[in-house]
Length: 554
Image (cartoon, rainbow, N blue to C red):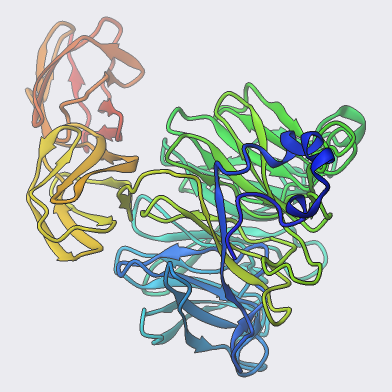
């Protein structure tokens, strides 16, 4: 079944249709297509949850997990094509085996997928695992309930260093959850135990454009209604916003993950709060300023509005954010919405559960935009034949693009690019600089990070040109400087890589005037007031600091 609007709207009297134009939004501007009914085959994965993140693999298929279904009824991992052909990859087992994989899957730079389970493992409080695209499973970590706490639910996110980062909810009384880092080989480090004042029950992290992480916690904070927080890679957490709730016309209880636009603005949702206590969409800057509610989910103001969002937002290549709500819509079984960068809200689609409606209902899983331009997601319940949920696509008419597996790296590092139609590729450029590349398959290629600017990646193929949805940031390095000492006014030549976009050079806390000669050389003048200290160079890709100090002489 394909539909341009709600199946319910299609059955209403024509005389009433005009009342619902605002809710249906340009009925044929988008096409919803149910693709697969979870549970339609014995041993199938079923009932994808709030945190069942969907990842695009190198082969163009989409990968995820469900916490229910599978041979043992405690969850399964699967791959599914964009046309809806599902292959089960792995069955999670009964206690004490790892089970209940709520997190979904995240693609690593090694081509493997990473996820977690909330239960099972050596201490019965969850695990972290990795999985190949053929279903080869490896357990990486068993949570203990101690300093590492346990019961992870949120998806893992790939950091700028190639490690995976995520959160736990905590297990015992007095535990409020943690943020942790784990290497692809399974070395886990707890980065931050939440203290309630800075949040409780943290959920999904995102990697920001500044290489810091941003996330939400459902509870804790100044009003025990949740927070938005920033975390450095070392684990320092700063509360950006404490939710005040219903009475303050603010959101509360954020659950779904955040997204960040290419302009740096961060968007998110809350499950409750707002004008009728049914949730909000908000924006906030990376510094915590500019917090604003962009939309109150409110059926008294917007007819058949969505209510109570749980899933992560998805950032489209059109600059808009797309999300789902678990309730509301034309039949109160959930909806899909869009929020433009200017804050304009549109209800795109209403789910239904009545007889003859095949689209499923109660969407909890955040959607993903595939490199073919279409969005894919899942409902927790309903479907064409059984009540196991539905995998679906949403076509907004957006063009194909390229996706970067990682968006940070040094000059000479491997750049991994997902897409389609790569066979016969003639050119790959980063920030306008041509680089060498290898076409591995029609859906995956690699390139070398060239000396040059950070920026978008452009792949030229026989079928057209594909631009990456995100910028790639070249990490600067400083390998040396000369002379090692001198008075104020001395010209100091710094050498390294990734320096072409230098925006600041500092001697300790004092900023210096400088000249960029090339990607490998910058000359700076020792500024007035400088004291013996290390020298740092800042670019869009970060800050590089010398290993030793420059000695300021009289």
